[in-house]
Image 1: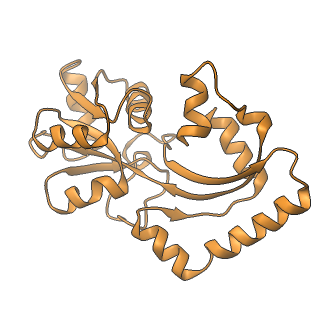
Image 2 (image 1 turned 120 degrees about the vertical axis):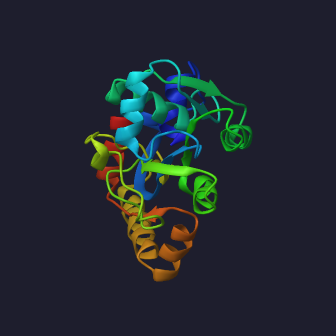
Length: 215
């Protein structure tokens, strides 16, 4: 997601054109993000967070791994959709961002499931919601943003497979068939799930539509 649909919005010059240089094969997996809070924040879910942020505009803050990171964009979209004013605090990487939220210097962050879940399970962070339309199999107890009053909020990180543009259609079809077959194997699903990812395997046209929508 970073290279394919975020970087074209951040940089004026890239060594490739996403829309003309690739042939989408399939969306391999989605990796939900968690909106997590320091336990001291007086909000137990997204609805309570929105109410708190509206009562105290500009006083809450959220950390990210840096400007233009998936967590930053997810946070800004949350602010737009919820009508809240929460201050963005960019860090140089996810590690320092997590450290300051764990220490209570910053109240919130949006982080991928693999990075956030250990702290949630240990009680050091409070999970308020996941960023995908459906609950994730790796943490089914955490509600989605959509369940919490933001019905069109869907901001996962994702992994996809693409071939070079002008790859013969027969090869794209063969690759798609083999990817989907592999993604249906229980051991592959389990391995992805262990890393916080939900296996997919959609069609090339569906994957292309997702890329264009995100761009």
